[in-house]
Length: 328
Image 1: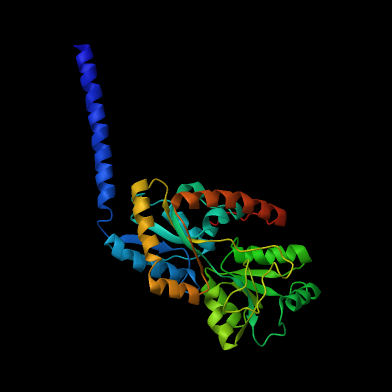
Image 2: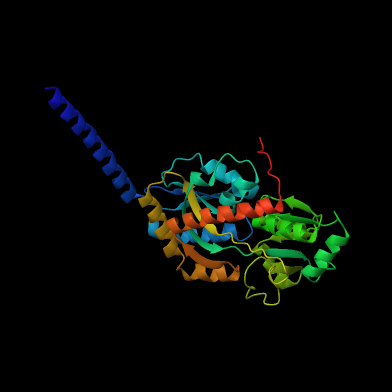
């Protein structure tokens, strides 16, 4: 009798496990059955917000449900990612973010999450970035700007989307190499950071594509870009590497969710975003914003983030940038 009861007990446990597994599979197959909440880790403006909103809108027709999108900028994306890390891993809570919030920020300041606390869904492109000043400023080249900063310690201020962002690291890379003392003024996003230089509140901005319409209009001057190759729209603007600074912005725009989302749901989201990338409007908009369209699925993106985490950690240590305490 004991053996019969034991076998019956094991059978019930097995049935329960299979029932849970079947429910999980059914849930994943039905996903999504309601709107998906997506928080963008940047303030409106710049290139992140419009590109992520556009791709989400293109993915909606493949998912059959809308995205409810909000912005929560600040801390280089860490504010929104902290909130996301506490959400249920059901696929209905994701973020549109950059790799910065996962591989730079946790190494640069104390935050209540680790990059392992999230599951990467996919990435769709590399954000453009560079150094700009007002067109009526006396500097026409990066070399002139650097020489001025060297001769005038503490007089130059520059804005960026936040401490630990690639735009911030680019400027500190130059500062270390040239022995420059300048002041970083962080903002909750590239949009507000650009407004600061446009209004004359800072000397320069290390930012993204929000300045490009003004560069074309002649009110802002683009001194150099943080990428491997020159932009098609601005072929006369050199890269940092061409100017002798071995730095590139290797960040990617991506989507992520809290750790624990079922792989089948991650795949469903990944496929919808990837199909959305084929939309002509998306392709044309990315070209206008100088976003280099590229793609990694969840597994490839996870591997990239792990490798980049180690690589960037080494750079931060070499720059001897102190960690900031967590803000209470």
